[in-house]
Length: 240
Image (cartoon, rainbow, N blue to C red; front, side, top):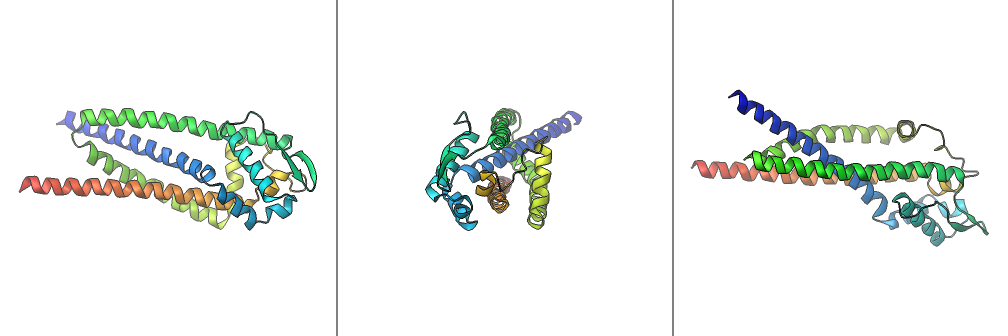
């Protein structure tokens, strides 16, 4: 009896770990989809915040700089340096502070992608173990995902409310957590990059990523509910 209960607890813990790994994968994937899947979003944001006027650049040139910058952040470019025509002068769009800070941002993003690969491995290995050792692994995973999701979804909603009320406060907190310097503080008078990416842009991007993340969570919630409903019907049919 004790051995059976101990096995159930181990399986439950493994189910929670699988759920956490899946949710982490959803989070990093949401960021990647939100930031990289649609450059039309960037163009709409630039029009919304009158970026072309602030920079003295044409939209096609701004989009060329954007694509180059995002390629750099994914590791596709070695150096953050691209010439653009700004207010009638051909010059490097990025300065040394831009290069330093975006280098740190790139390390953070690539580190997230590496952790996502680790999470995939954990998810696959633990799921394979459960499939082999737990007859009710589908129901177990569904149950543990729902319980874990309740916590994450609650935290996501609370964080979303806080951010919507005072975005700048939490934007600053984020930078203090992930960066140990003040090189993320830019001056619009001298730094073109902050004119291209004003605070409103970051707010809209965070909301976009948050919506994608919640959709991921809800889709898999629907799947987990379907699994438990089908299992319940099967049990009822078998007992008749």
